[in-house]
Length: 202
Image (cartoon, rainbow, N blue to C red; front, side, top):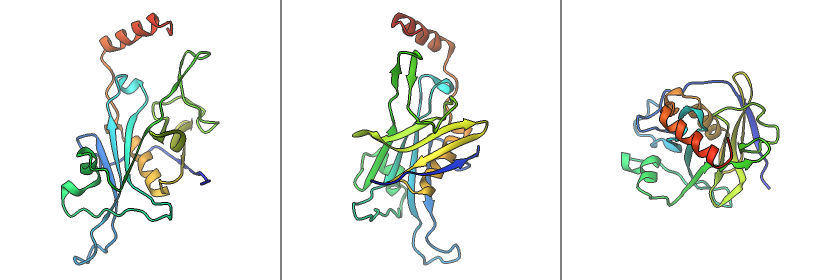
């Protein structure tokens, strides 16, 4: 059973966001002044998805990381062309050697009359940035979570296949305001409110 590491992050801004709402993290494995060195290794891709609730709803994202074998060996990706990058492989559905993680689906809480996620004390305040990432085939095994515990204070919890660097990079990407959805149009919010009333949730 792998243990869950933890860290606390403060609000930060990411400067490497891409216009198509995706960002990536790479590790420079060669010295900057060594043109004959190895190509840099890509470690993570983050793809943000639009939420119908806009900024009023939780952030939706998927992460793409090199797969890790049972013996601890991690697949290495050093793309020589753009089409070989992690995010391009994801978009083209070329997923060999890659592991995908996405949001854990919240469950309906009758007492609170809202959808909730269980953080076991690791998130004590509501926030659209509170997220949990899971493998879609094992939704009860949380691999990463970000939870607000105070003004500008969040807990970051992670475990295999994420490293500390990858977990920190996800948190930084989430905090980049440029990647957040714009508010949902009033007509959409009205429609959602009517739906909830019709379902007896409002």
